[in-house]
Length: 251
Image (cartoon, rainbow, N blue to C red; front, side, top):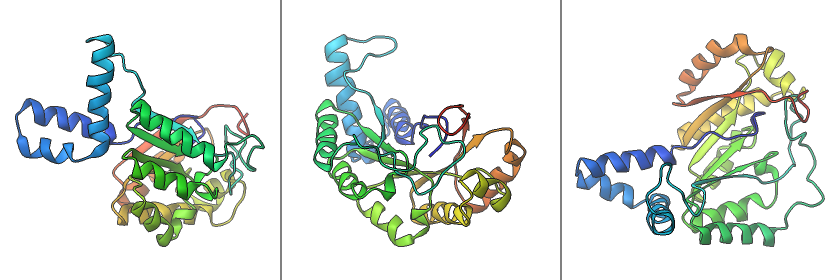
């Protein structure tokens, strides 16, 4: 999970811009193709029925629901990253039950939210990740995830997530230098870099919209050029640079 505490907007919004462009140019086929996407349809309904109907045309446009929710799904994590703003490790005692999480998904659906990103902690290590992802996909959201990538090193895990509807995968890699920078950042866990890179390779292979996330600090700023080379080598089309925030384990 990136240290910044935020999550860059997934390509759902780029899809919306493509729809608007196609619409303005009266290109029927691209419009029809994009409207087949339930998340795009949900975004249009939220804007027209909710935003404009309730508030009229405003600048910026007021909406009855966010377009994009980032959900810190759990505090559980399989790494101990030095720059973790959550100080993640063990689940918190007051985390939602599965029943409560499913109710949250239902309420976000009823509110008209188009996109949900699961973050943490490491959402994939929690037992509730799979049933919640399945429900998010079933209800027609645009599902995204911010992950350290270790579980996606298994192609079977990545395939299962894709079949349940996951569309955008953002994997954090702190350096192109595995043992001296990345693995050290990740709590001295040997092999963390190799698994993250493999996870990103699997995401690209399976056709996810994928991104490499990089938190910039004084310890790895010299790795920026190498990270861009690594991203190009893997075939990922998006590199996201996060600012470091000195909270949690990152003072």
